[in-house]
Figure 1 (cartoon, one colour):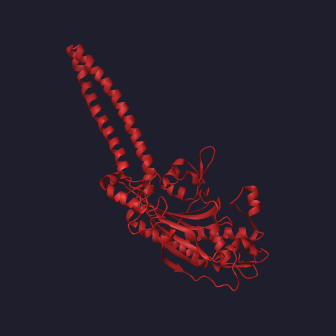
Figure 2: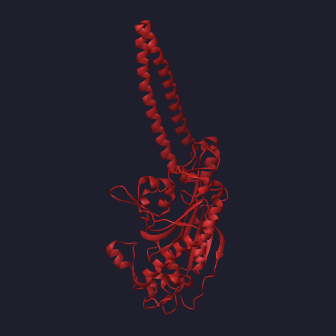
Figure 3: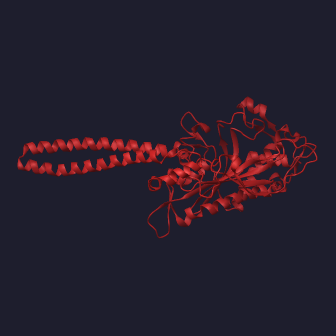
Length: 430
């Protein structure tokens, strides 16, 4: 949500920031509604003052026996009461209209976000690791002999339809081990607090992080009104909703391993093979709640936490900063981490770490008080994948594949696999 006062103070700057996202100017439309709302509030306050003044005079007229003046004043009080009710209702309607409009406008990009139209204009920050050279043509994850019996898309389609998978045996075990490895690393080494949250939430929670109202079609809603979370960013960030936090309690850093659900609206025909793009998947999420002055450094810290998982797993990656035409709705600045997939011979996104400024905090009224100060401020929020478990599984399988169809597993994962080091071509842990 945007601060209407900032739009009033600098409408040209607001429109210029929207233009970086490729959007048309909106300040005049916003301010017209705001001015109408404020005018009705002022009119209601004036009418209230007139009513109060007339109310005081009613008694005096009655005491003097001036019946005509008494009736005039009594009628005026009644008229003003009706006028006030109408103006207040109109002001409320204009306020809702303003809030509905502001809720659909994306966050403003940070000043140092590179200008660009789409993903082709993203800027590479760094690379880590060297993609492995194979003596054979590497396969995609779903083609590997080691996973043929442990990754069943036909059975999933029978159960649920397309974009689902049934994992079993060694594949399921490695998938589970990856999630445990991520959570344990984030809690024991990266200072994040593990949280287990619901996967069903109310409208307010989805509104707070920006999934509603604009992106309702991207998520699933139950018949009784709950929403299935597209990521535990929704629940973790909403832990701060309506809270008044002490400065000393910040930053708050959370992590959660959860099921996630996305309708993948608009993605027809994209990544239909394998488990790269699914309706149901698992992710280890990171969320931070910080003071405003700390949020950009926290973005770098969060990005490093996600990168560290890939480095421990010996998976080559590159980190890019998204351009203004590619950042998400609620983000001011985003780092995407892309892992190397030899089967596709390219880097694919495995984590997105974003700083949202006070955009989400305003939507959910999440504030803090500085030590010794009385006036509260909105916190800043950040979120990032640490990592997408399914995509990490894909990367581990493809980067560890051997010519005979077996898969060597990263050494860092061995303790979470009971000392097992590979999946044989027959799909057995060994």
